[in-house]
Amino acid sequence: MKVYHILTQYFWTIIFVLHWNLITPQSDSKDLLLTVEEKATLDEFKSQVIPILPEDYMKSDFYLVRWLRARAFDIPAAKTMLLDTMKWRKANRIKSIMKENWSDMAIDFPVTFGSFDKVGRPVVTLEMGDWDFQAAVVTGKAQILNRYLTYIIERYVQSVFKAQAAGKNVTRVVTLVDVEGFNLRKHSCPQCISIMVRWTATTESYYPQFVKDTVIINAPTLIQVPLNAVKPFMGRETREQLHVFGTNKEQWMSFLDERIDRNQRTARYGGTKLKVE
Image (cartoon, rainbow, N blue to C red; front, side, top):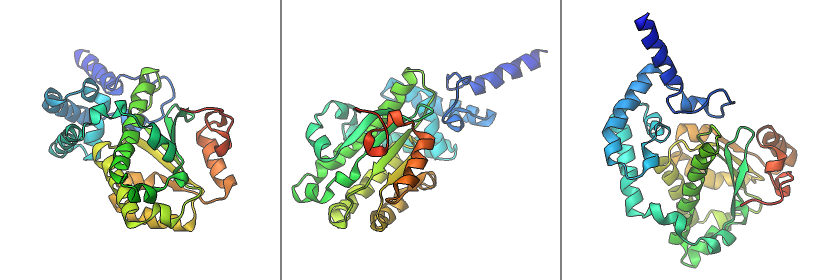
């Protein structure tokens, strides 16, 4: 009976290892559940890295397990990836990035927060067709644009933590990218592609597994030019979670309706929401 009791306790430890209530519907259950071997690996990983992590949220199982998953539960590889991220965050002053004034950039490069999909994931909407990468390049704003794009990532990662604090059992966001108005001049000049590549590489290297799906709508055929440039910098999972729709509104509306209620989308995306952050 004692052995049975120990095994039972260990089973529930695994189920609740990330401290979420699994009675409610789960959006990212595969991110939350661990096998016995994975739990043991996580415990060993924690013992090695927690003493050197600067932020409390970084010490959570929820945060740490994604580095292991990104490196197939190889502790040395995951540790290298995590420590490289800590060095990058310090060198680029990421801790202060949310306090910086991004109001001017937000006008030229609009992005909205404050919506959620049907299972509670934050939805980040990028109206990228309105963005003019080339204008940023020729006016000497490429460097500040790179930092602004990192701010966007940091903000949506924090939105996941806020969703958890509100009782939503989510681990990732959904990004909705509207490229209506895309053209090669604004979006695909050599320097423009360089910015997109850097943004993609930053996401993959320093923010692993925080995006569930990336949905691109109103895409012309020429969207393949920047996509083909950035895809080599995407992980396999990221590529598999990329959904590209053309200008057929019925098609992308049907896809969005399955995942995001209309009261969480503005009229631009076939919804009824009047205001987003």
